[in-house]
Amino acid sequence: MKNKAGDNCAMLDNRAMLDNRAMLSDAEAPSFSAEYPLAEHYFFAFRGHSLIQQDAVPLMNRVDTKYLIHIRDLPDILHACQAHYSVLRIEGKAGLAYRTTYYDTTDMAFYTAHHNGALPRQKFRIREYLTTGERFAETKTKTNQSRTIKIRERVPYGFSREAASLLPTESELGPVLDVGYTRCTLLGLSPPERITFDFALTFRRCQSHKTFGDPRVIIIEIKQNKTDLSTPIFKALKAAHQRSINFSKYCNGCLFTEVPGIKHNRFKWQTRAFHRTAEKY
Image (cartoon, rainbow, N blue to C red):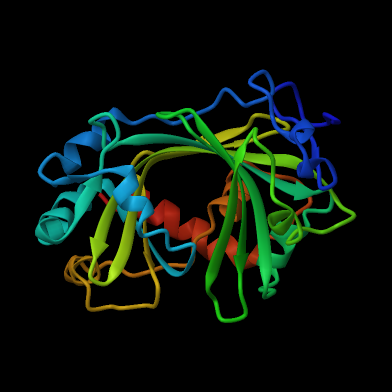
């Protein structure tokens, strides 16, 4: 395993991903997260559900709808839909810290495909759940029908050939961006629906460790089998005059942390929307 991006970020190539030798060791994992304990307080009135109950609604093949909202707007939105959803709690906690490292080829093929609007397209990442200590290798594919398909395998127990087959077979992958945040997840059953709320997003470029974040902005993502705008969360967001947005954590994080030599015109309006949201009040 080669390392070209600093002490905390390990190089990974596709061939090595197929066995345990490719898995990141604890020494190689980036010591980076964005914990936000106050996230708990926004969800105290929601009834809880377990991880087992949530895993029964996997939504690994889905449609996604995203919103950028100012944190001051959150209480009214949650109050409007509180009766219809439960919140994931693990060991009594609703706010769960995540750390994700995105990988790309040396010529930033995954980023460029998204910038150019290519479909289908893929991303690869290592995601760590800091509350439970679990770590997963994941590929996400955006299909020609604009559906999101996710394949994941636990690390360090190996990475499936099915997932690896989605990636460029000859390209060596290296770590580009770390993203840390605290996530709260609501679950609805009729229709099957997950809503994630990402607090205190922090982006860090792997090579330079340049960091960007703004705790005033929350990303809400609604995950469904098919888009249903009649659900309580959509109604609450409409009543709050919120509009959906296409927003990639990976691509915009690359811009926020000034990854060199990448196209950016397609994402400039998204970064402006992020800053406008932060400065709303």
